[in-house]
Length: 134
Image 1 (cartoon, rainbow, N blue to C red):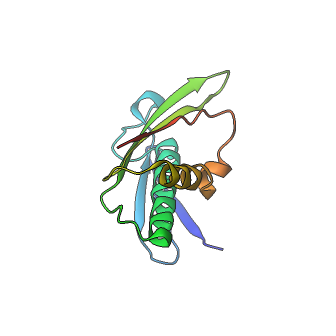
Image 2 (cartoon, rainbow, N blue to C red; image 1 turned 120 degrees about the vertical axis):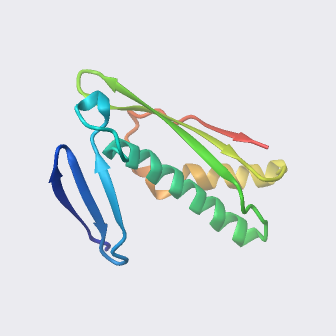
Image 3 (cartoon, helix red, strand yellow; image 1 turned 90 degrees about the vertical axis):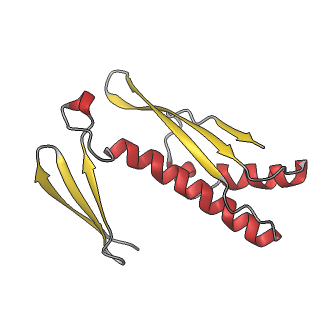
C-alpha cells in the first residue's frame, strides 16, 4: 500500500505529496472549470498515470526480452465530455518506438500496454485508442 496526502491550498488548487518519497505535485483546476490551469488537473493526472504505466510496462517487457527501447515516448490527448456529467471521454495514446519491431515484438508490446494496471483500472466508458508508430 502506498499513501498519498493532499492539502487544499485554496483557489481550486491542491498540493499532493507522495508518502514514500515526499515528492509533490500541484493539482490545479483547468481554466474551463473555473481554475487557473497552471498545473496538472485531476483528469490530466489520470492521463499522465496511464502514460507512465504504459511506458513502465514497455520497459518491463523490453528488459525481460533484452530489447533496448530507451527513448520510446508517448503522447496522450485527453478529451472531456458532458454526458450528463463532466468526465473524461477519450484518451488517445500515440506510442513512438525508437526502433522497428517485428510482429512478435509488437504483440508483446501491445499486450504490455493494454494490461498495465492503470489501463485495466480505467472505466470502459472511457475510449482508449492506442497507436504505435515505428
